[in-house]
Image 1 (cartoon, one colour):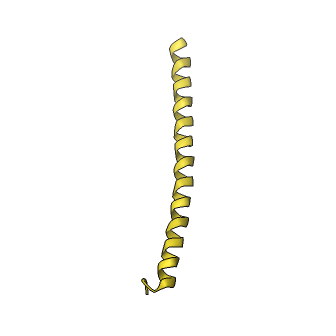
Image 2 (image 1 turned 180 degrees about the horizontal axis):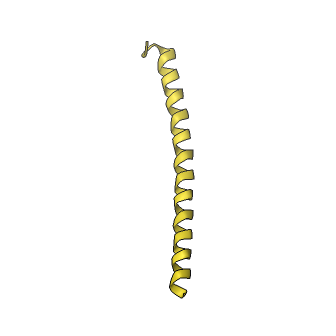
Image 3 (image 1 turned 30 degrees about the vertical axis):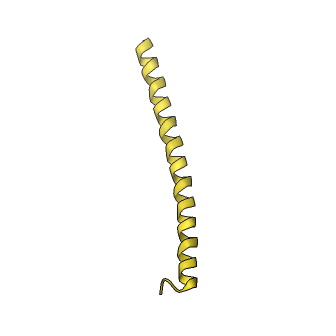
Length: 50
């Protein structure tokens, strides 16, 4: 019985870690996309990209 409870706790902990990692990855991806858009806009405005 104790092993099952320990397994359930380990599964919950793993789910929490995965959810946290996904949230951080999404935030990082959004920030990188914003930076890339600003850089591309600057390159377009200065004439490097037609």
